[in-house]
Length: 467
Ligand SMILES: [Zn+2]
Image (cartoon, rainbow, N blue to C red):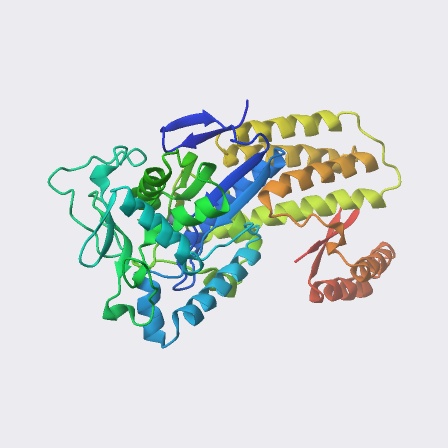
């Protein structure tokens, strides 16, 4: 089956075809940097990461842009509270965001453009919309008139209510129920302090929606392939992005809109406003592994709500351990001296590969893809225990798993994770064990543990893995 995505715009699964033959241009709505992101936020970035990795797996080149919102009501308000300049304040949280991305093994976008570095482009787009009569000036800013854009509502399917149109939204927190005219440029008021830029139409600062239109068009194109974000961004943020961009260019803005669902805690959306959130740091200080947190966030389909529980992370830790043991077992084949190559292995790998790709091609059905990989691991483990895996077979299995992990990003695939020093101690211990010198064998085992590794005895010898 060819690659398909569920497109929010058409509300159905569609074959994926990039505009340029082999290059996919993708824009992800990034964070507003006014605090530490929580793992509910990171689900969106994990989803776009899996999407990007799978496109790369399929052989596409990907140009990925993720914006940093570093000026809005919240960043201005909280920077003033902390007594920092807007830039000092947002730099602090931008840095923290990048560190968390790295810990979660989320690949870097090609560019992370910041709103405050695109003021010129924002002013130009606003001017264009004023010139063509779609925007208008009010007392407190320049607004987009949604009545003048005939396709308003095509993404969110929201109906324009005649009695409410012409009503303007003043804050960056938007009404989720009603379509309203929204600010492209907000004139300065004293609450903004020194967060102000000059423009032809008066001193002020940009509205929230316009930054994404400007940065997407500047760094990708006026018309590009994929735009992603959480479902809470469909309306009004993405609806407004489409309106501004298409009203200015007369071209279709984006071909495929992909939206991810929330993380729930006890049935409610994990969010800052409800206070039911965990940051990555909260979970790491409780001793959970980043790989397990990443696994938990990627293991259900992006369009399904994900219920966050500690049992869920613990189950994810078990999966990570399963991967580690699997790699250690494959490595152990090298120590066997009576291995015979098994002709079935290529077929087993091929079958698992097809099943994984079939699932992922179907709108990134990752749980089915993972099920295929677990079934594969189970079959190979049986063959390993029967000593029916040769050296070349083991290498082929490792290669295949590495390819799968280029999408998942949760395995320790490098054999070098076990340093030589540890292997030497393990070898010493194995000798002691064979001589039934259990005092020495126990001491060496403890030494291995104290250095951060685990040694398991198996029926064919031993296996090492990282703690
Ligand atoms: Zn955005």
